[in-house]
Amino acid sequence: MQAIIDNPRRCLATGFALALLLLLLSLLAGDTDRLGLAAFLVRLLHVLAAMIWVGFVFFVNFVQLVALKDADETARGVLHSAIVPRVAQWFRHASTVTVLSGLLLLLLAGYLLPSLIYGSTVFISPAKALVLWVAVLGGLAMWMFVHMYIWPNMQVVLGLRPGDCQRKDAGARPHHPVRSAQFAHLPAGGAGDDCGRPPLLTWRAVPATTPAPTTPSLPPPGWANQTATSRRCWRPPPRARIS
Image (cartoon, rainbow, N blue to C red; front, side, top):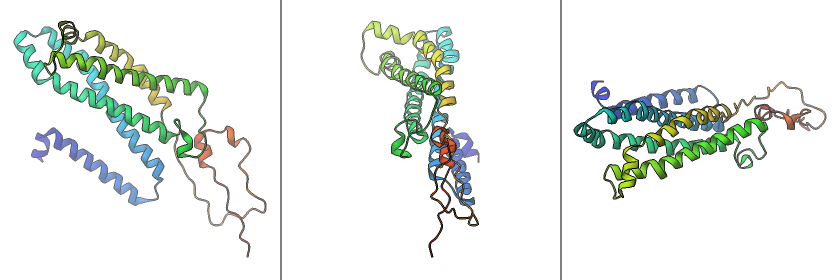
């Protein structure tokens, strides 16, 4: 147990193993909707990656930049060699996983190319769609900002690649870019979490004792205008057998 606690990677692997064990037990306990399970797992990955991304944004703003500002040259060199590269690595990879899992979640929720998953369109109100896609564009913009502006300047500062004095000075004092990222994370993340939540897939089995209809089954009135959840829950009753 002590060997697991002493190593952060072992702690993380143990946590994932326990989560997989609980998931396996839940799968063995009853019937599982594969599409709903896939959407749940992708959403879990998306939320975890976003937590790490936003967490490092706050860490850089409230801890790392303050420490670099107050430190002398010797301490600043130690921070640049021991802390900043690791923070930048987690920061970049967490942003990439967040964006990729978010795009996959849009597919599984039916908000992006719904005909590929469900064979029909998924209803979403215009106001909700507007907020959702603004949040998606905001997330993509922040991801591009990290990989095309912040990280290239940080590479120059850390000596990972050559650069001119202007880029080095911009990377050594990244207050404005990182503060802009902090400013944009909260509205984009909140809107995306509220609007990007995949509908619950609650398939209902038809009891065997249900009386067979005498006329062909049609969807209930107003079915085309219902939400995605209620549309997916509806199934036609079984037809009568001809003996």
